[in-house]
Amino acid sequence: MARIAGVDLPRNKRIEIALTYIYGIGLSRSKEILKKTNIDADIRCQNLNDQQIVSIREILESNYQIEGDLKRFESMSIKRLMEISTYRGRRHRVGLPLRGQRTRTNARTRRGGKKTVAGKKKAPRK
Image (cartoon, rainbow, N blue to C red; front, side, top):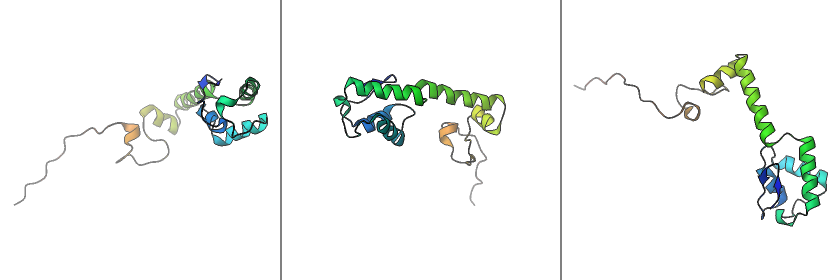
């Protein structure tokens, strides 16, 4: 089993798809990496030899920000927004949607489950 950037790649999948299991690598970036290393995209992960794995590792380490580094960069960006108190930073801090979505109804993913508030009772019918 190939282990790249701290991630065990699935053995039976094509290397093109297996590389997308690494955080920060999608399909287009995976194809780009394989083109740089001259590795066939249709080869299975279990059929890679050691030199091919090393070449993929070298390209990832030198050219791309992936896994922990990328996650750290994202969290630092969010913290920076919160510190300088931008609109997006304040929305992050309060846990509300950032991109202009409505919050009067919906937005349950960011706000959590429903909190029922005691309201006015309906007038009885005559």
